[in-house]
Image (cartoon, rainbow, N blue to C red):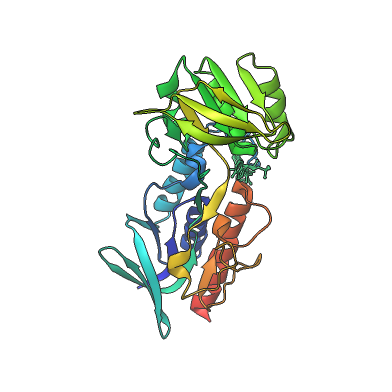
Length: 301
Ligand code: NAP
């Protein structure tokens, strides 16, 4: 029996494990794919207090190492559901069941898709949701980045180091992401801002050949000849499998305030998967600590 079962091995989940282990609790993190979560795709993290600059993958590997050295157990399995058997909470995965005294849901979010023609078909053949993972395949070629948040800005900056030309397509004329990066991009000769525009269609037989872009102000449409489209239009939660156990809001985020307490006693929610205003690395880490300490209190009471 585990004191704290943590679902999700991103920043929130791993921070929760660190706090749980340090409080002497038996902790397990169950992760469906890669430990580290979203931040592993970030080429450079520059806004985590005390660390001026670190790659997302190094940051998350350090977190995992820290949690494991403290004794946190880790498994890579797909969680299929959770249930409460009158005090004992059970995490169900594809192959096993993990009985726990408390559960922390730290499932993060996943990439939002544009929903335009050929996006799904050409994913992996020019359409990508991770510039850090796939950028090197586009060395010397022309690519587009879609989005106006920090991820899109970072992706454009990263790709500008490899690609001949980077079009940064945003649906408004003001970016949501960090102004500091916008300024750096403005100085890059191979980066072109395509503002007030949306992608209407991605075109290509076996791989991306071009995209059709629509200018929302003028109504005009034009083609951009690109071999890669990096989509960074935000994140959506995937909490449907927990909907019977905890209350979700209308967008699918787990209803929980800053105390990380959900509608179900003994089940806590930490990080980007819960209802909150600010989704940052720092707030994910903060949630991990808050949820773990609340879980520690729950299992003792
Ligand atoms: P985000 O901040 O939600 O930005 C999403 C962007 O995509 C927005 O500019 C939005 O436009 C645009 N968008 C949404 N749906 C669209 C659609 N259907 N078509 C076209 N454009 C669309 O997402 P994010 O950049 O992935 O960032 C998520 C969170 O992670 C943020 O809190 C961010 O600060 C954080 N982050 C932190 C770091 C770091 O290094 N610490 C790095 C990356 C991200 P509008 O602006 O018009 O809404």
